[in-house]
Amino acid sequence: MHLHGVPFEVVATDGHAVPEAAILTKDTISVAPGERYDVEFTATETGQWMLHCHIAPPDE
Ligand SMILES: [Cu+2]
Image (cartoon, rainbow, N blue to C red; front, top):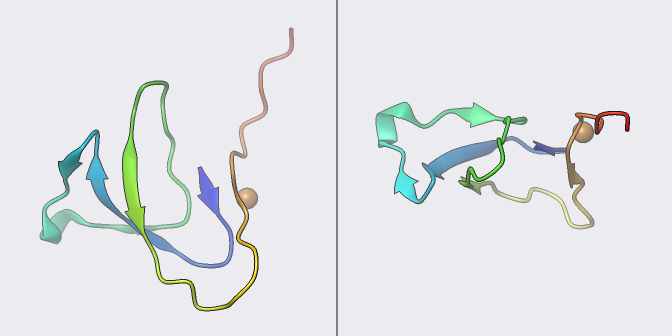
């Protein structure tokens, strides 16, 4: 998962809060099937924000 334009903090994984001292600022995280992440960021500009995946699906 990648958010363009502003970094975010991962504040919880799979519903469990990340301890304050362990919170990292990121712009990309790998999310495996079934995993959940809660992220927080401050939108510094108005407009649309691109949130997407950079991993291409496998060829079939
Ligand atoms: Cu991107």
